[in-house]
Image 1 (tube, one colour):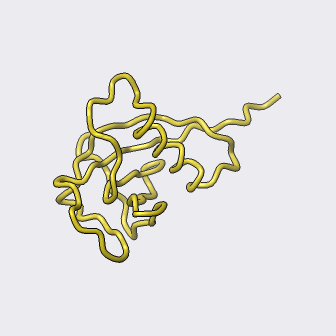
Image 2 (cartoon, rainbow, N blue to C red):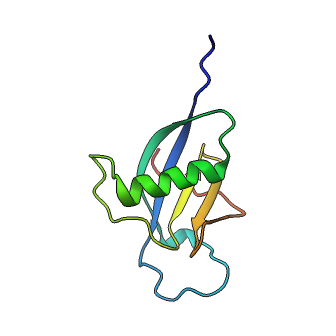
Length: 106
């Protein structure tokens, strides 16, 4: 039987400083984003980006990886999936960015 799971590269960027005022659509200013963590998340091939992002949100708010030494997720933080699609954490859910954040050092 073929492997039915797929690994997704997840790159985590935290906003610095935290967003203090939340108004309207969320965006991310690359100069305010700090790359802090990379991991691989295994999901079914039919998992949507939304499914994966919800798992990432849970992981970094409720079940931090043992080697993760940063704060929990907050509005304005960014996740990049598979080095090609970036999403900013909004007050409810995630909003896609029209650019992809990449760590300076991979």
